[in-house]
Figure (cartoon, each protein chain N blue to C red):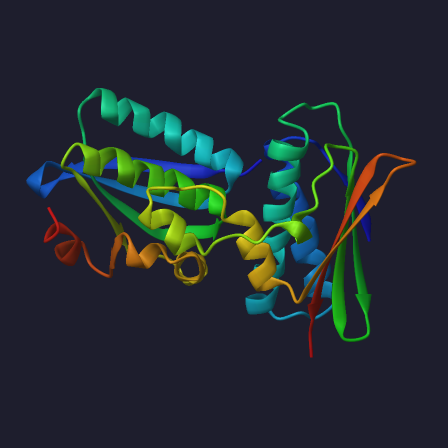
Length: 114
Length: 136
């Protein structure tokens, strides 16, 4: 089964920097959703997803990210994607996610959206 | 190459790895291989979630073939009848702008693969999905 590493830290502006590593398929997407539900319980609604370490992503993984975007923006929060891997960027571009969610190369750029 | 895929999303990675290794042996470049693997994953995910509704009591068999200049993925399952060739998925961006976050799998399959064919066997009650990608 797909192994997804999730590392979370709170950085400037009280934003959660969520570093994902590994494969984000339908199975791993459930792990991500479970993790995020705990952040929502803690009223955390500002996320930067560092996707530099994602070696595979499917539409199910994208759906988990999009769902989080819809959830947090409803609460006046935001999601930014940071430095997606080449494989990841190809899929995000194919689906058009980059036209919905900001996608940047550095943490400083990401923080400008909060 | 033939393999049986467990009817669970936990088994998707095994199927992807098997295809990736097989494509490497057939000397398919990584960039193209990634797309074909994605198409397989999307098809299997659809079968597991929609065809079987997560019911683990189902069978999914996959065959990988290289015929001259094309790669064929043949996916056979005994789940619910589901002909994706009849579905014209809207562009994901259109769905996303309406707040939708799902339903992109068929779109991806049709964008990535050059041909998508579907055969339903009334006799065996099986779906057969054939995904074809032309390669140089």
